[in-house]
Image 1 (cartoon, rainbow, N blue to C red):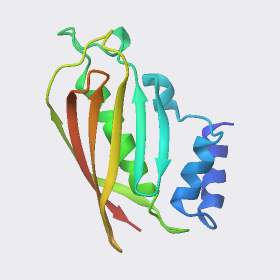
Image 2: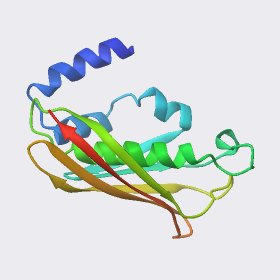
Image 3: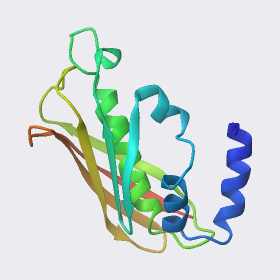
Image 4: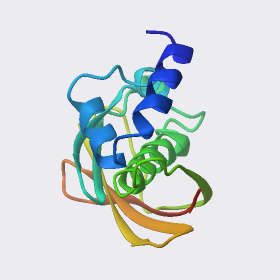
Length: 153
């Protein structure tokens, strides 16, 4: 299915499904979006107000300093934060990110194994939603944290 077809299908589903229903349908058999394919990460778990993504940092994600580029962590956090907010939407509601804040706590390296990002909604009002998340390595250490504010329309 091409991107235009996927967009039309999503638009139709929004009219009748909650955000959680949309995300559950996606995790049950949807095609990952191109960014997830490019950076090789997956939506692992979804529930009301929560999204969990996993990825394995590799040589493909290196910056010139020899560490995993901060954009890798930012993209995983942005994806998980946005999807956690998506799960609390009512049928017909949409959202877009107003801001994204990332705190990098330690460097990631290829060969470190799987990282897991867990994001949870902090607040959902009529017009604004916020969420926060943590990127944790297999070693149990927190490598980055993030939060977002999204506008609901």
